[in-house]
Every structure is written in C-alpha cells, then in structure tokens.
Length: 279
Image 1: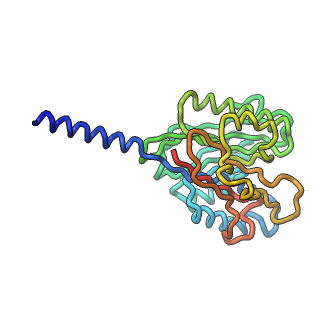
Image 2 (image 1 turned 45 degrees about the horizontal axis):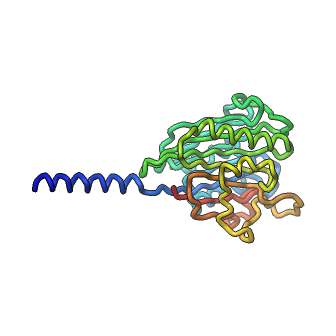
C-alpha cells in the first residue's frame, strides 16, 4: 500500500511539473519610430509630444518596446518615467552614445536578460559605419530574454533600414537573416524582428525574410491594415505601411496600429504598432 501511495505521489508531482513547464508565455511587443528629438518639427517637436509618448506607454503596457530614431535624451526620459523597464542598445554612430539608437526596452519584473548585442548593417557589421549605398549608418540591437514565470526564452531584434539606399535595404535583409541564424543557432525558440523598414515588404528583396518569419500584421485581414507613416497629417505620395514586427515559433494573438488619442494629434510621424504573442 505504501508503495502504491509513493508511486501515486511521484506521478502527481511529475504531472504538476509538466503542467508548470508547459504554461504559455505571453508577450506584448510594440515597435515605435519615436522621431529623433532634435528635429525641427515646430508644434510636433519632441518637447511638445514627449508627454504623449509617456501616455502611450502607460496606456498600452508593452512588455517589450523596440524604438527607432531614439536619441539619448529621449531614452533618458523613458528611463526616468518607467523604472520597470531596462534597455539595451548603443548609438549607431560610435557604438556608444552618439546618434540614433534602435534600442530594445523590456520589463525587468517579467524578464531576465540572458544576452544582448549589436551589429551594423554594412559590409563590416562589427564596427560602426555606412553600408553599401545607404545614406545613414544603420544598426540592429538584439536581446535574448527569459520569461521569469515560465522559464521560456526568446530573442528580439530591432532595426531601422535605410530610407535611400535600395541596395542597402536588400543587403541589410540578407545580413539580418544570416545574423539571426548565427545568433540564435539551432534553438527552436521564438524570434521577433521589429523595425521601420522604410518600405513595404511586397518587394522581392524581402522574400528571404518572409521565407524565415511571418508578418504579425497578417493576423488581420488586409482591409483592416492601417498606415504607419502619417507624415504629421501632410500629403504624402509614398508608402505608408513601413513599420513591421516579424516572428517565428510563436502564435500571434493580436495586432493593432496605435493611432488613437494620446494627448497629441500625432505622437510621432509614425504610428507605433503593437503585436501580441503566445508561445
């Protein structure tokens, strides 16, 4: 009888451990081109819309936030107002503080940082510098995070592709795909890529990425897709859906373009996008 009780107890403990180990992790990921803070934008200058950025973060409650065009002073503002976030990333111009960041911020009460790094979109990705026909130095920041509750880990990559160089965009996508494979390796873990691509992804140059990862926006029917570049409400004859979150080894449970009212007509010249995942 004692032996049967011991067997039953062992099976119960094993069942509980299995149940805990199989619990899904969830992620609310926002990608946001914040518009660099020294731009001469008149009434849309950073000093007039920083409170709208604060309200957006408070309202939408991301667990991971990928920023593009962020300057040190803008990151300092977020750090001061949101101590529950930690961040990784460097300035693209010198690998330290100079220039725009493609920073990743994550909830430090939810995730542990296991690893992180940066690489440049150029022929020499380990050092700051222009790549191919790019007009600007471009960078990718990445982080490997572990969910504290479930123990599950995932990778987040964040970038801003060049707005001029067509060769640079094409080569950057190839480099990003290769670097993700190099950094993640053979691990069957969720991977996310956020960014301002300065293009829609219907162009063939994005096929290598789409062969590896899905576009979270496709959770919605195409007629519900919303523009992400708003040009401060001005006339604009270019592509308006240019901000993306790609993913693999996860399930999309929601997607929104954050074009609501956060206290200013325009939080930036881009609308943030938010994708929710389960894995």
